[in-house]
Image 1 (tube, rainbow, N blue to C red):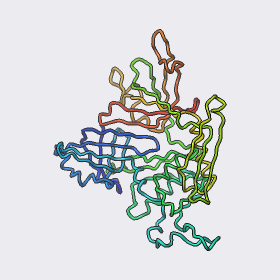
Image 2 (tube, rainbow, N blue to C red; image 1 turned 90 degrees about the vertical axis):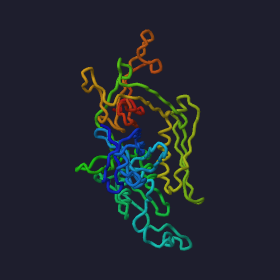
Image 3 (tube, helix red, strand yellow; image 1 turned 90 degrees about the horizontal axis):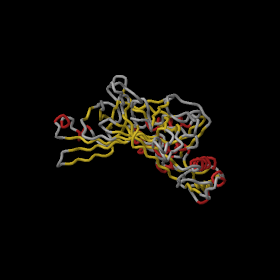
Image 4 (cartoon, one colour; image 1 turned 180 degrees about the vertical axis):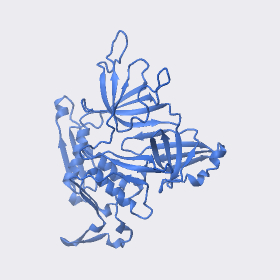
Length: 405
């Protein structure tokens, strides 16, 4: 049974069930989920919940619960139709709260604003960012650096949230965020994920042990295994008779392809950094020279950091970005009504899957003429979406190198 639940963001408690008219949800990899629920206030049970008070934006959360999966987070939008007496709630994944939190230590809340800059000891005529307001981590994995940044945010008064953490993982990485940069934590978490070999970061919703609240486990990949995924591989047959797969669409986008990647950064004219990475593989394969430029990392001060971003852009630019999107039955059964095939909940975003395609036969029209060679396509699930009916799940995947599974 699909449940839609509201509760208190800071505690995860005071959960209440909603009856919804519609409830589409989307769960993408390394991005905040979205849940939209429409409630009919002609329903006396829903009127009794006093949703104007119990579903307050930013203060309350909305999640959809399907079997063992909890998807959603803080409510950010609310729209009421007076004529129809219908209320629409719009929520994003729990990570969205960190789009509203800065990376600054507790001292920033009490220190005099005139002390954010201090004299530069190497040149008394200049000032520099106060190092006491910097957030510095070293000797850690990327995932643990992300964890430490979240924990710092939770230390502030009112910053407490029902987040559970994995153990620290040692590593060789260091990171510093200056207080004067006023960097939002949400942006930083996305930056860490986008690094070359950067880890997946996911906030996994789940019931507390007493089943009276929701908590979120902050999952991060390790330096050795950056991806958060299940060890099992889901397999679907695309072209078999009565295949559970339908509405398969493939998309390819070559607009980010490049043989030369450039990057620029620096906060002032005398500290401009330029990074350049070159790979002739595409040119040798007959492609025209293409270039890409990234100017989004304006606060980067170290050449090595900028080089990492530029290198990642070049790696991503070596091939067209390809996605395969298809629908599958959420809970397929055989002729006897018993489960047959992958059941929703046995696979999640980040997991790997395989799609079997039969070789194209022009006489019988079996197989597919575009992917005429057929075979098994190895993919990674990068998004899932569904609705209140829970009959079909839309799966979005991206190809992985042959032999990666």
